[in-house]
Image (cartoon, rainbow, N blue to C red; front, side):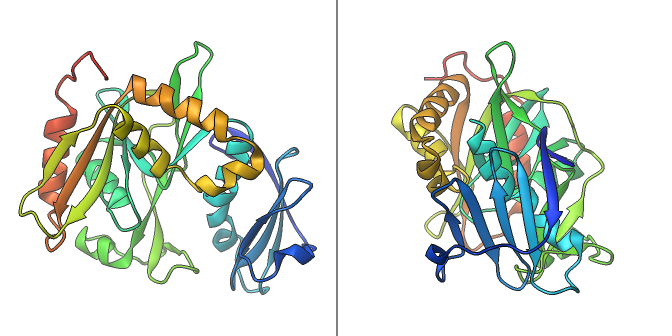
Length: 284
C-alpha cells in the first residue's frame, strides 16, 4: 500500500488488458470507470478508482519501480483524487507566513524552479507538480502536502548548482530529474495566495497584477490538473463549485517576467517581498 496526498493506493504489477477503444490514444476512461494511461517505453497503468487499485505493466523488465512510480504521484494520483472530489491544480506550493502560496502556469513557466529557489531561502516545500486542495473537518479549503521532492530540468539543476548524480531521471522526459527536498512541511494548511507565472517578450521587468472577479476563476480553471478527466467522472459541477469557493478565499495574482531573461533571483525576491506583506481583507 502506498500513501500519496493522504490517500491509500494499492499497487500491483501484471498484465493490463487494453480495451479495443484505446486505439493509439495515450489515455482513456473506459465505460466501467477504469482509467488507462500509456507512458511510452515506461509502462501501462490501469486504475480502478473505486478501489484505489493501480495495475502496472512495465514496458520492459529493466524499467525500475522508481521510474514507474514517478507517474503515480502525477496523473494517476490526480485521477484518484478527482474521483474522490478533491480540487487538483497543476503547480507547486511553499509555506509562507504559515499558509500555502501556490505557483501555477503553463509548462516551462517556472513553477518548480520558483518553489525550489524559495526552499533554498529557508521556506518549506509543500508540493510540486500536483496541488491538492480539500475541505477539512471545519469546512475550510486546505492544501494537502505532497511528496518531498521537485521535478527539475538538468539546465535548472545546473543553474542552482545541484549535481544530478544519484537523482532519479524521469525517463519519458529527456533531461528531467526528481530532486529530493529536506525542508518539507507535511501538514495540511490554509491557502493565502496563488501566483500564475507567465512570460512576455514585450516587457523588461517583472510585473505582478492582482486579479479580480471572473479573471480569478479563469486562472483556477485554466490551471486545473488534467481538466479533461473531470467530464467522464461527472465532476465538472463539483469542480466549478470548489473553484468559485477558492477564489473567494484567496488572493490571485498574474506574474509576468521578460521572456528573454531568466531573472530567477529577481523573481524570487519580488515574490518574497510581495507574499510576506499583509493582504487586503477583501478577496473580491
